[in-house]
Image (cartoon, rainbow, N blue to C red):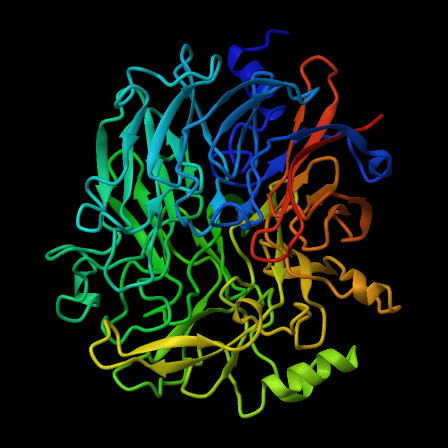
Length: 615
């Protein structure tokens, strides 16, 4: 029997983790089967690697968030660090092969020190890792040597600010998520400051992988004469900040489509100066990957005034309809919805209804009268609560939360924040966040983790002459979340879940509690779930692996039943998405996860990448 070169290449790719999401479309699925429900309990630590890049915010100006997912390509593991270094490791021993340091200014007050990973590109000869930095440099690094490619841009890098941030030289702009690759194009979103109405543009751009030259630029806020410009009142579109893709893009390589998960126009919680639906804010946008031309879009939130931006990589997936396999794309949201579309036409594959939502009481604000609600699947996150659902697990928490909500309004989803303290679910961190969902193409099942945390805020009038007349004000809780001073949520549990959804039918297969709070366990209270940041992966071996939880643990669940099968205590919480691959020498399946803790959720910090393997 003759095996084609293509088949061998496909087999090798299946044993690796060549993209942030496993494949270019972000399914986060691996066909590997060595580790199974029968033997996962035997997993042990193969090695640990310490990057040295960690900050608790006491010596350096901000804290670190180790959210990276490494790439496994051609027998090398490529990892980015919170200080934006790129490190190559031996994937079977954790030994460092080389490291590249872009030398970001660590004294700058970034939001967090953070980088979620790089992207691999090859033309069959040259091999490159592309990644962006907090200070807006896009690097092309030789995957073999760790040296910048002298032919790319200015001796290996290009400055991303020109063309988008020229008018705002002091405002933040950079990359925290990996670019996407389509043929010889490096397609980049960005993190852009959104604290003021005007700021750097959130445009998505494609650069030539060899030269670094700009190939196309998509205006995320349409300019005069462009489709969607009429969704902005007057000239409110001009120099509008936000509407950027800070999260991860997805590519349908076969059809040449790139999918953008776009965010809110700035400012996040007040839109009186930008009346209208505000395209392409909070939209899933499909572009021709070769040209940047818009193919279709769907806006998940009209005139967003809740910071409910699209945080997660779209999942490019197959689904079945009437016995026929349909190319689809799923977008999960902070609000707890899953939107599912035919990825070629943009037609919803489950009906979406425009439903009336409450108006705003803020003078000058004009909330959009309706919002889109998918009929299926049902929401995977809590979207409201009643006052009688306050957490009563401990007297201390009940007393604090009862005091917190005195005089507060308990809103439904899309209730605008008012002049009184307003309790809303989910919080601005979700629901779902950048960790996204994983998908099993064999069983057509989507796995999505969610944090069940609300937020409590009110709008307050600003002094005369302020840039905008109203701003949001949080209450006296960490990060304005709806929890007590120990970050125990104010509503009854569960506070973190992992769910499996049949995407052919839109029905749930199971929903499991995700995470524990150790102080409550010590009091004999059963697992409640906990806040979580990071995503899951699913394997053909029958497992869903996930860190994410704010309890310092890494877990494996049975993908069929949702039963928790394995738990490993980490040096810090793993606010990251894992990866899995086969070692070239040992032929064993490894699972790796970044355990950095910290972030905005806890005070335990680490710099550890941990690999697990069967004995």
